Image (cartoon, rainbow, N blue to C red; front, side):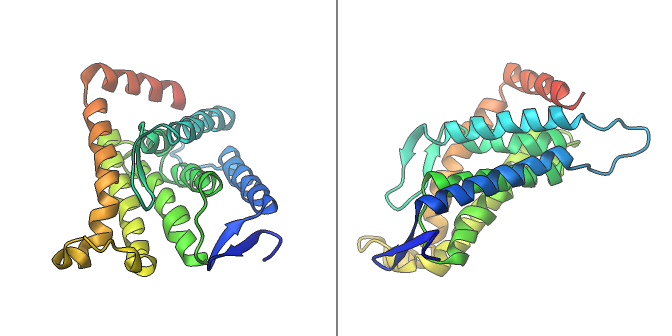
Length: 225
């Protein structure tokens, strides 16, 4: 425990070895994309695994960079970023749920490295692993009409769900004194979905623009052929 975590004011902080361990785990998990083979009909051609890894790498890298570009930050964590969730959802939209979940889980590990806040194991799971992995659910709508839009909305709502559950379990003592008393039972919902839906609304508006929509369809065609 002391090798990877150190305790301060009742909370845990990552040590240098902790950062290295998580980074290595992210690399190992993400490389599983190379070997991941979704079941396909005999008539379908499998996507070249090297191309899949390359496109997923670009999506995760773009999302990670975009997560540093914050349009607005919340006082207790969370922010409206420059479409970071959207880039992660692309992996699922291109290659389906399995690959999408792997890519999103890797992104969650990178978020833990980027800005770690650790109370205990389950808080890390809900705030980092479960929440960000949920972005891979965009893959459920890979081949559906308006699949990117629908998948993105579902993925974003799913991420908010896990953050909200984590809020009820671990952060109810953090409610500001001036927060309306009648709304206290809804505080985790209001807090988490406020910034998540704000970014979601910006993204939905952008990808609904016809030229952008057509450009994304062309990118998908490049990714899967």
